[in-house]
Each structure stands twice: as structure tokens, then as C-alpha cells.
Image (cartoon, rainbow, N blue to C red; front, side, top):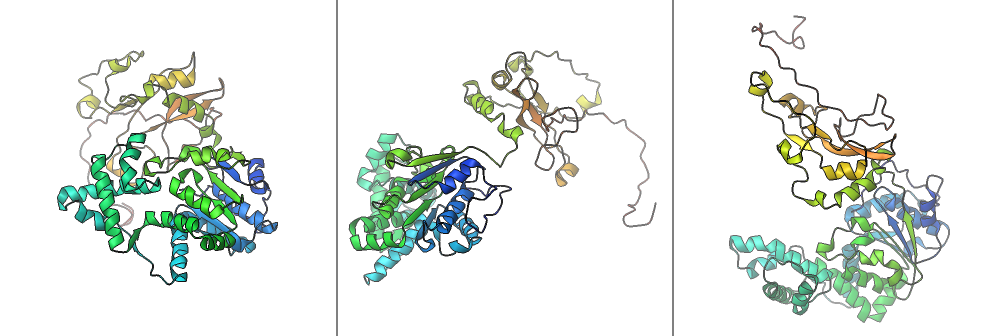
Length: 462
């Protein structure tokens, strides 16, 4: 889920936007129109804007902190949000939690108010799927993929009878034939009902059903939570969106934040179209974009579009995108080569180092006409000593794009990082970054054995 933004100032205790926010963040915090969606990339301050938005609404009297519901996807994100809101005096009573935790709390209240026993929460599907799959090594290995299929179906709101049609509609691969998975899914649901059990996926669906079919329960819940805030909205599944709609009712007080480029959970049932088509789902909604990233320096952000364009090219998707120990003839390297000297100690006593080549598509696409078309580097094999102390020479360099100030075009070079970050430039390159080349190997000449000496660290001067 959303990582904590780096070098991000803490929220001020007044609840306002503050002077340390950029114009787009200030608009997202203070925009009075709802529903409101914020599209924010990595490092642009998603969590910060969410917390400041809540604080601003409470401070200006537009929201009551006891009626605010902030929904996240992980307990860690909920804890981080509570920590940020705790820095604001007026937001101590805000309710923040995950979809599942909030649904469980509401369902427990529903069952207790009606004097009914709360179903036992099934923490692991393998408890039921194991016997259904027949046990043995094959059955145990099938538990995880079958459980994932059940979770996908429930996230999409697909019952067992409609599973085969749903899988065929999206051309989804299944670990077993779709009819067999549907039969296991059906028997799994029957075993749960017999044991008065519910799994984590049932929490979302049952809470939505209670909201839809029990007007008193729905009215009480909507009165309790009048202002809805959702983090990482690109990961919302159809079942969660259905529950969110039930919580919202006919109101419009909804604020969501997410990043469409981080929508990577479609295989679990998430649907990023709820964020991308937010204005279609909520007519009259406003969408704000946060374009400034505070996580990466300009030297990384400037060539990012060129990297994306190069990686989307056809050549970049081939299997030999990056290869080691590939003969030079396969790449048609235009530079002259020198035949190795068989009498050289470096060729007789040392193994050849693998060479990593940057594909031509990157160099041609990003550098442009007249620029260098080949960038290569030699992977340095770390010695035992350098591995212990995390030497400045990494085992394998990574390729990084740095802007070429003279031609306004990025150029790709290997960067050898020190302590996990590129070295600051001390030479003439105005970009602030440099490509450190591996030091040339100088073969040592054999010398006469020397007399062992004790370390001066344990004894006196030797």
C-alpha cells in the first residue's frame, strides 16, 4: 500500500494546508466540491493530502471528527493515518480502518443488536479446502491457487454458479478446469454454512447486504459516518465499491485518493476503472492531479518519460533485453576488439567477467541522432572482503538515465552506487551524477614470501 513520503513535513496542528504544500496539494486540501478524487503519483503526498484534508474539514467546521470515516487497505496504512491525524488536536475521534475491520465491527453490532450469535471468522481457507481437495501433496499444493480463485470470485461478486461464465468473460487462467473450481467453490460455501463460519471475503459482502436489506441498520450507519475518505482507491474491488456505495447512500460527501499507475491488483479482483472513471460513477465530481513528486531527485524524474517510451518498444520486450556472457557478434558492437593474450596472467588465472549490454533500442530512442549508441559496463565480482563491508563496487551495476544538459536529451550510463545511492559529482558533469567505471585490473607479480606479522591492534607497534 502507500509508502510514507520521504522528507515530508508533519501535519500542522491548525489543520489547514499550511505554507509547506504546493498549489495542487492546497487545492486538493481546500476544494469545497464533493465528490472529489485526487490522482497522485508516487511521492506526491497522497497520505499527507488525505490527512490534511480531514484536518482542514474538521478545523473549518465542514465535518465533525466523530462522524468521519477514513478507509484504508492495510492495518499499517490505517496506523500511519491515525498517527498523522493524532498530531492534530481536533481529529482525535476520527475512525480509521480497513474495509474488513470496519465491516467486522459493523456486523458484530448488527448481530448483537438482534441477539444473534456472531459467526466464527475463518482465518484460513485451507481448513476447509484441504479435505475438499483430497489431501496429499497434490491437494496441499492446490490449496493456495484455489483459495486465490475463490477470493477473486468474491471480490468480483461472483457466486459459484456464475464462476465459469465470469472466468470465460475475462479469459482468466485457472489452476484447474473452471467447472472443477466452481464445484470446489460451491462445496466450500456449503461447508462454511454448516459450521456457522464466515471468511474475510464474506465480511465485505455481508456488510453490504445488511446495508441494502436493513433500512434501520443502514440509517444508523450513515448517521454515524457522514464523511467518507478512501485511500488507495485504485485497489477497490467491485464488492468494496458496492459496500462504499451502501455507506454513502444518496449523499455526496466522498473524498478518494489513488494512483492509477499503481493498480497492480487486478488479479485479485480490484478494478482501477472506479478511479479512472470517477466522474462517470459520481456525476458532478471534481478530479485533482498531484504532479509534483518529492521522493526522487530531478536527475531521476527528468528521463523517466524516455525510459517508459523505450521500455514499451518492441525490442525492449524481447527475451534478450539484458544478457550476460553474450558474444559481441550478437550485438554487432562497432568498436574494435583486441584478441586476448594467452600469456597474460589476467586471462590465465582469472575468469572472464560477464558483460552487461544496454540494448540499442534504449540508446537510439533516448539519445537521438548523433549520440552514442552503446553503453556497456563490466560486472565486478565482489571479493569476500568487499561483500562483508558492502563495498562501493556493487556485484552488478544497474543502468540509470541521466539528463544530458548539452543536448537536452537523456543519456543512459551505468551507475555504480555507494551505500545505495549514486555518488555526487565532483567533476565537470553539471547533472550532479556520474558513471563510475570499474577500475582496471592490474595483475600482481609474484613476490617472495614475507614473514607473518602480528596485528598492531592486539600488540604494540611491530
